[in-house]
Amino acid sequence: MAPLRGAKRRRKAAAEKKAAMAAAAAAGGAPGAGGGDWWDGFCMRMSGTLSCMEDAQRFESIFKMPRRTFNYICGLVKDEMMVRSSSYTFLDGKVLSLEDRVAVALIRLNSGGSLVTVGSAVGVNHSTVSLITWRFVEAMEERASHHLRWPDSSEMEKIKSMFEKIHGLPNCCGVIDTTHITMCLSSAEPNCKVWLDHEKNYSMVLQAVISPDMRFMDIVTGWPGSMKESSILHSSGLFKMCEKGARLNGSKLAVSDGTEIGEYIIGDAGYPLLPWLLTPYQENNLSDSKIEFNKRHAAAITVAPRTLASFKETWKFLHGEMWRPDKHRLPRIIHVCCMLHNIIIGLQDATMDEANMWNDHDANYKQQVCQLADENAVMVRDKLSEHLVSR
Image (cartoon, rainbow, N blue to C red):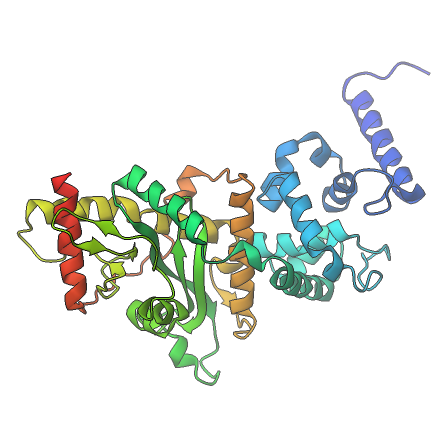
């Protein structure tokens, strides 16, 4: 037989490699069978080639996280995801492994693809994609809640130190902001108008308190897009706990005249000015101290839109219009995506695209303005502003 040359040789080598992979899968080397790497087999199902194996970046491009983070998540949800170990199968009848199931759920959440699109890509029925994704959401709620919680006192001291070091805002504990999760509803649907926001989109609102390292510290979601930022705040558990002193009750900042300034978060002009929620000065002809406060406030607050833009860009299920979503399940899916966001950052795997980090998370939404101001909060903000320029 004549020697193979060029393209013909490469084609034969690729065919042999593919055949070897298929043989290994048939012999028990398929994902979850313990005889080979799960990712190799999954790539074969997705693309029919071994290109995934040869490109380490492909894993992160598909799942938006490194392999070790994926493995950690698999470990978290293993018991719940494998309760019915033989219930979910590929179209060829092979049972999905734990990794397969987590992979299907993550692709559904981060690709934004339809059930049919995701099912076709990985070789499962679209109903299986739906069932697995919801099982994953329930498993994350059960096992990963500790990844989204209010910081304890020692953690909060570190957060305050970061805000002061980076932006010169002492005793600041976080940034509050909201974003809209747009939906596509039928005009015939009951109560659809309540979901119509001020930009004429059907949407659900996510309110979040965010740390300087882009973690979610507190979220509330499920409220319709027609509600203003200030109304959502007043309806939240965060507001109730801060008002009664159950949160933001740590160490205070002593200023030169002996006044003590408690812990606070910052927000944009859409929020009311409260002793524990400081917003920027909005009037004209500001003094030097007020200008300085606004300057530092504006710099510190950017972490919120950057985080929300990156969050929605990663979990594309929440980016763009969803066709007639289940409004009872959607808040739970948003919550789980927030936990996944924190896990990625917590494992120091946040390799976020700078271009995406600066995208507008609420494109075409105008800045809301709230004129409500607590008298004590006016004094607190003035004292803090004077303290900033006196140091």
